[in-house]
Image (cartoon, rainbow, N blue to C red; front, side):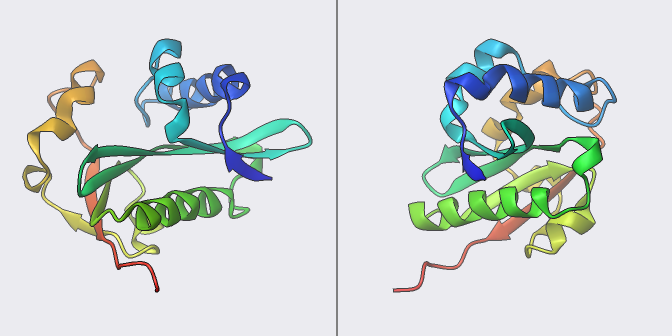
Length: 154
């Protein structure tokens, strides 16, 4: 079942994100950050277990970020990440956002949704506020990608 995250999901979301953060492929998120941002998150749950998560974080009136895309390893390559990202993009479209970006190590995954690689300097400065907490700052090796949104069908 794909749904918006609830308070009861936060600790499991953190465990999932921490698994990938410990591998150096994702930014670690504190419980405090996750509780504050819980409304940004979607989860895919099966049998009471969260198999994946993804967030749509609004940055400005016309810009949002897809972040914290994570799927438990044993459930990988089953379309869970695709469903989660699509839910975020559908929400972005419904909100009237013009652009969505991501910072990723998996550009091929995001290109399937229509994201294009851009130079990081094309993103506004406020995008980098979370980067201060990254162990790779200031030598970020993630790839910046942007999707220009189409208006929702009338």
